[in-house]
Length: 173
Length: 93
Image (cartoon, rainbow over all chains, first blue to last red; front, side, top):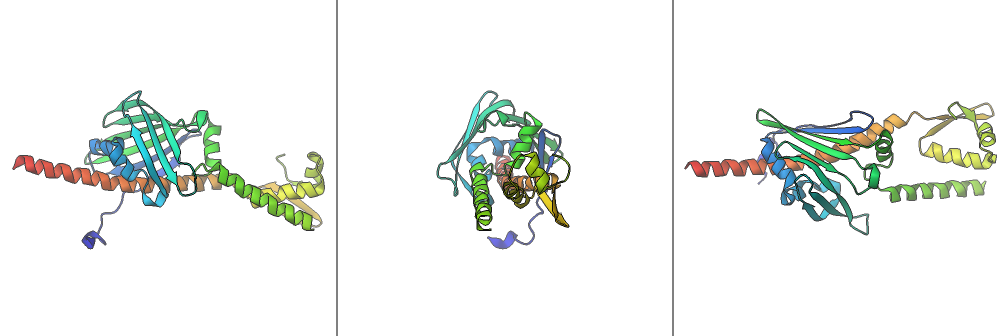
């Protein structure tokens, strides 16, 4: 089983940048035709196998995706630090098979981004570009300021603890 | 308030007690948003240039999350490719 180790092909790099005040862009190349990358992205049974790799510490409770223009999706996850499962949901507003997916992110209300993923074939490779477009600069700033997991509760608990400590110090002197 | 200011000036500006303002500034210093420097008997506070650093760190976290996903996606895509090659061979023979 382990005979492939040590001379595994190099993984293609993943890049991420804030391309404008409202846009966040991630890219990655895959050594396969676009239709296969698209299939792995749009088939729930396959998507569930890669969307939450072990390093992310979450697991799927359910994964529903009606991948067509106007269709909806709902991903429900369990996370060790949360009592209740959390849901991510929205609608596909544009689906071009093997080329393009556009969906809304509606779980956090009006500040949610619209995500566009394009699959471009270049020879034997497919370039995947994923762009999150936020409604305003402030919405993206807020997403960044709130931390990568959006765990507001945890952040405020930490601030509370800090204020308690400082309060105790002030009282002590 | 954009300019540097002492705790006394900030307390007066926000109509707070010195102790209260010290506490507030302490929280901002802990959070990395403000730095202070004591010159003589006066402690001067200024806004820390941390915004961009924080943003860069967040984007790097975000990139790593997608890198982990895409590396896993790569394996699935390789499976699909192998399956297709296998099927193609079967059809030809």
